Length: 511
Image 1 (tube, rainbow, N blue to C red):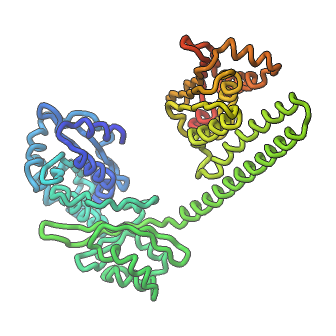
Image 2: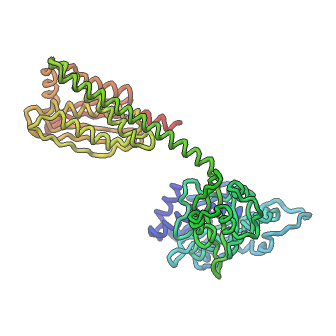
Image 3: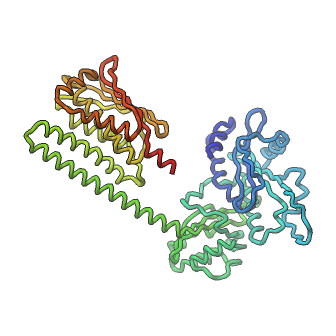
């Protein structure tokens, strides 16, 4: 899909509206391929009269006749005339050498021995949007397989041809996207074909099974689809009204119906011909088990969130106890150590607070870090100091196993800047910069204070043990396999550079 997006982005004659139309076509064209047992290719014009294959779709309901990948390749020059003809007309047409096979689409001579060599029929339709052709849709059919088609296969093929023809008139893809459900119905999961009055022409076996799950056990063929829905829903007028766009078949729509403990996703695709609306295809999908699993995941996510919330609360209780103990002690060294421990516990608590509000185990690290470091500066700075904090770049999301040690590391570095970098000054700026490529980060923490040597001397004079420096070095080397580089800035101040690989994120990608 990334290749498709790049190809249409680079196409010189397409605007954003055209690209959106092609994206909607590719989002829905599997329905055509599966209903009609067809291979589809989307080609668009490029420079110097050439055409390029921008997309390719194989049927999931049958064997593809195109095992090779065509996307990104130029179309053979002998097809240019056919493609130009398609782009100049609202009609669809077959390649000349196969026009004679038109009457063979549904031959049924079982006694005749047939040549098993595929007889490929190429059919072309211009893709029309906003009054002009922006590409060509090609369908390829193996005519040798059509002789074994049953009733519902033939109805599906007819519907596929109708949708294909609608492309050439600018009627498909639909202007309003209708594949917005998380579990979209698919042809292989069941389909029903309606006529222009909403009467059921035929239903595939899987479609019949879906309606049986809902509780409808009577004959389907020849019944109005609205009667089927009303029989299922009884006096539930609200649900009947919700299903009206589905059973009318007049407009594209999708919804989910839950009856008798079963959940079935529905989708309606109206069928139009040159003379207007003549029917619809209803797609089904039994999502009962998927719904059950979704509910289990929601329960699991809620449990995990509650666990993180309780861990956060417990850590905050520990933080509060450390703070109370620090206030009671008379020894300044012990008091300082307890306040440092309280600050570090608070940093871990903030990571768990973020996790308790997340739908997964990923932390929005930028949000956590901004709040944590600003709180650290507010606590550590003297009342007469104004220290600004600047962030450059984005850390993005990361697993909690990476977020917790990294937040401690950056908290230690910023704390060190505030405590020792601005001695004798009333203002200053701390800048935290990051450049991320996948799971590799280059991080720098710098200040415009008194410089590295002076700040290290201040730390020594204060009699500190260097626990903060030890925390930084240990986490960076052990947890991230990275490096720490400290230097003085020529213009004054200190800079610490970190190289980090998010190992937990990297391991998660390998699973």
